[in-house]
Image (tube, rainbow, N blue to C red; front, side, top):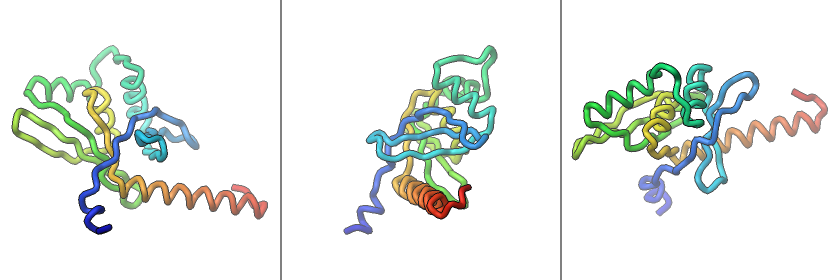
Length: 157
């Protein structure tokens, strides 16, 4: 029964909470809608700026690439339905964007930074696969436990 539930598990809805600078790197913070888990996805400075502008509802003086992409989709009759962060491999996140035009549907691979930028501009839902949340949470807990162990030993990091 557990295997069956894993095979049919639904992605977890998340909100794009914001951009945080951690250790000199920009990270998008995704928080599950239950508020129990989060994922930090590293992004470049220009992606962080674009996501920050979208979160604040601000527009750049000229259309950014993501604005242009959404305008192009709209003009062709396609709508961005949702974005799903699908996996985490070798510390790299992967995501898909789901597009719809009438009865036609399409799924495309996209970098999470681009997918999240598009989702914010299109106003669509963002999801993270359950196993990605679990894996990330476990890795984060392991890192925190290591840091705590080093502090208790007086080593410090």
